[in-house]
Length: 170
View 1: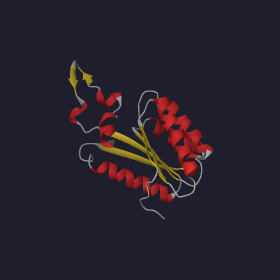
View 2: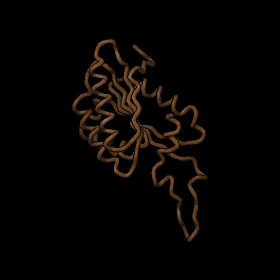
View 3: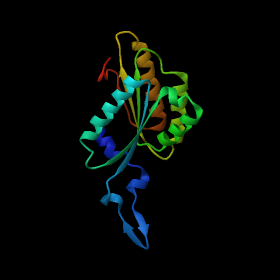
């Protein structure tokens, strides 16, 4: 299902043809380019997101070119770094949020996600949420999923949640 979204989420500039000197040159001869931004809680959740990213690319790597940026929650809480991450995420085709399921999504991260959603006016990125849902804390995961689902719904973007993504579990 995610592969289909990879193929569908090309930005308008990638789908359109270039016109030069009265001739139309299609970009279809080139590999489609996709940008992915990963935002993660800590090192472990960052590795999980990287594993997810690598698995996602496995089947389409030969057909597409991908670029990824990875930012920790701590980094995006720093205004200058958060602004840079926002600029990249605002142009991304995919945004992956990876976190533990023990606590609610921090306020600064929610603020960053809200700002990101405003920047995606000309595109429809795919939002993916990865959690390692422990036995305790199910309310926190459900709350975060609902919040992210609402953000995606406001932007009319695809949303996928993986509440038991336990690759590289500690």
